[in-house]
Image (tube, rainbow, N blue to C red):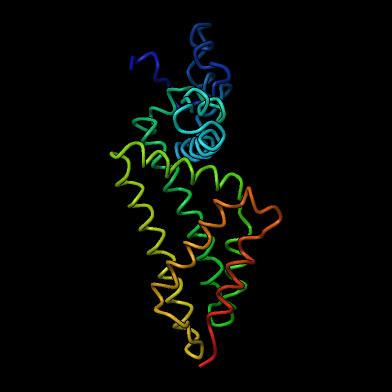
Length: 227
């Protein structure tokens, strides 16, 4: 990659600083009138959001970093200044998706765990996501990992992060509700929650009108019981 292909993280619009310099204006004037540099954290977040959308729409193989950059409002150089390759961007998109799911669950469970109903948590957590994009992304992650064995360890790592996070929250809820019998080992229940939701997400295109959160919550409520 040539240096000319790697500009800074500024938006693609304008170059007021260069224009000011060529016209003889003082550097302070250029700073005052030119566009401000987008904070690096914001650049990265916008690129991750754009990457998720492009991967979901076009698939990993057909996705182009130019399209990701354009969707985010930056030049291609901004992508390379934040990610080493398309595979690195894919891994970070997958990590972000995992963190978003766990963050949503954590917010639901941790706010007042003693007063939280597990059925309501499951309904909200698994029923409020955009299932079409979630399905497309999950399909791409899995398919890419199967076709590219070098990416499989990253997929497995992220799956374990998700599993550990869900297990932690399941243990947290049942520790706060000793009067409830989960009906199975908690780690098995955690796996079942993820497996049921993933299966429903994959089947969503054929299950018109089905709410995955409602289905998984119904299963949980059928299994647990008062001691």
